[in-house]
Image (tube, rainbow, N blue to C red; front, side):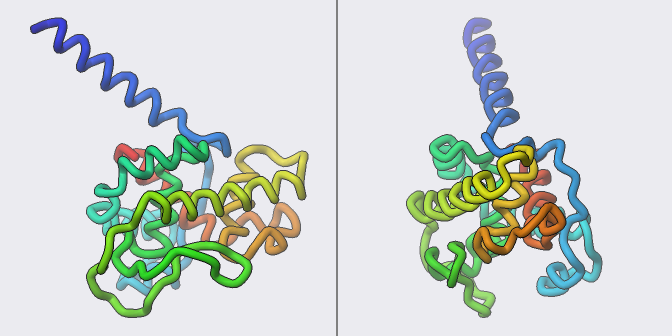
Length: 197
């Protein structure tokens, strides 16, 4: 019986160390962010801003996102992106899949296409859809790396997030790294990271 407990303990430690070292594009645990703008929270009935709002929005979406956690881990491994970042983007773009209609090209960016209606999802988000979203982020990050070769991994992640919907041309210098999408996604990602993603 003690061998079984030892094996289970090792599996837990392996899983914890794996989940704490995800991603090739900066460490979200150490990134500072002001969180969501006031407008983001207001869209969902929250009358406050910042990290507190981002965390509340992440908390609201978490029950929907938990079912995708195994897929997020698989996709995260494939693209070397922290699953918490994938969860945060899905939370920001579609409220955890609650209003997802389609994933694909949206003008110059690639992301989740939303519907304004607040109704239950009609289909499961597939691994290929999550892979497409994650690949879009890595394409943006790599574009920022080529454009600004002296930046840090953290700046690359921020640049990739800021250019996620608008394209690499949106980021012209380091002052553009404080966009609302990035600030909100990073705050949500930090929340999800603390909660096992």
